[in-house]
Image 1: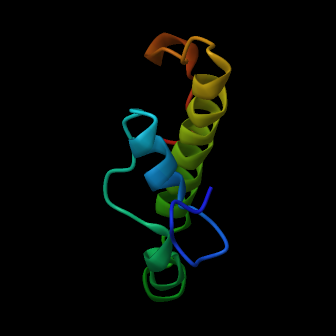
Image 2: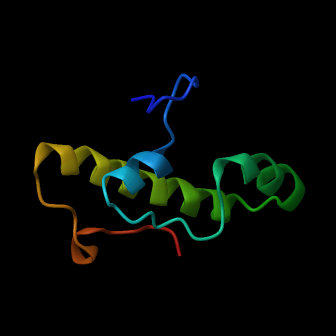
Image 3: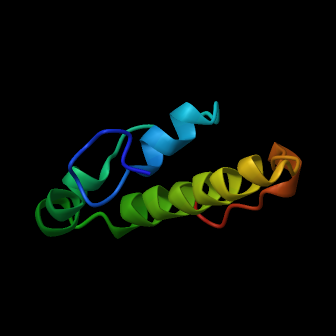
Amino acid sequence: MKFGDFMRYTSLRLLAYILGIPSPKEDLDGSKIRSVYYEEGNIDRIAKYCELDVITTAQVFLKPRGEQLLSEDKIIQITA
């Protein structure tokens, strides 16, 4: 799924947007992970970011299959 782009991948954010799935990411994107780790040392913030990626990935997997998306009460988050 390149959508006319020359990159070798399509961002999860774009896939979610095209499928009408809200992205739960609040304050971080992949380009900031390095600085958050090396400059801030904030591993908890990175863990939260990764957890939200997993949730979005699951939703992107379910939507094209015609399956019901996960509701908030079905998602158990382990980070604060």
